[in-house]
Amino acid sequence: MKNILVIVCLMIGIQMISFAQEATKISVEGNSEIKILPDEALINVSLKEKALKTALATEGLNQKAAEVTKALKKSGVKNYELKADNYFVNVNRIYTKGTSKDSGYVASQNLKILVKDTEQDLVKIMEALHDNIDMGFQLSFQLSDSKRKEYQEELLRRALLDAKSKAMSIANTLELGNIAVHQVIYGQGENTFQPKVYRNEAMMVSADNQRTAPTIQPDEQTLSDQVKVIFTFTKE
Image (cartoon, rainbow, N blue to C red; front, side):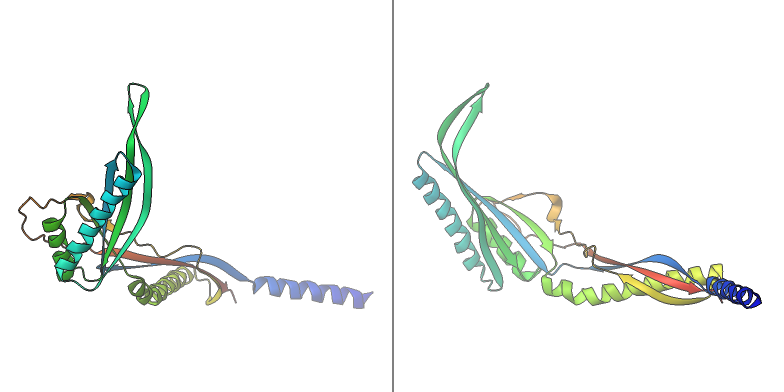
């Protein structure tokens, strides 16, 4: 009987020691942020042509696309990419006073001009568009994939250091003991970067207008990242 009591007391003592040494878990979020100038410019040119027949509408649309291509060649810039998307031919339906009337067709298409140089090349292309075409376009700045990848490792490193600093501050302030990493949670979110539209409006260009060379100064953009780290603080 005494032996049984000794074993029970020993087990209770071990449990109490284990409980006293149990690690306390605290979750900390680390954040990082880097400001950087965008290294690419994206020009969106919206083309639209109306005609009574689909063939005439598409022909007119193709002519406008050819004007843009010709203007780009006149700029002398080589380092750009031209892509076309969102090609549609729809019925030109006009609504008036609750009734509708079909009046030919509307062909539309969007041209995307990706410019690798946001300084001299971009100015040359914009001047060429101003001088040689008569349609609207929108300019925005963005970060290239290669540039984004270049900063990903640094963003993660800073986020981890931020989480560690916060955890150590908590441990020192509350006297929680030794610090150790228990779990790292990363990848639920994505690095954030929002291209900013230049002047937040579309530009109308006309070959008839006399324009001075545009001055373009993109604003700094923000790349950010975050990581969640669970730390343990062992009380001795």
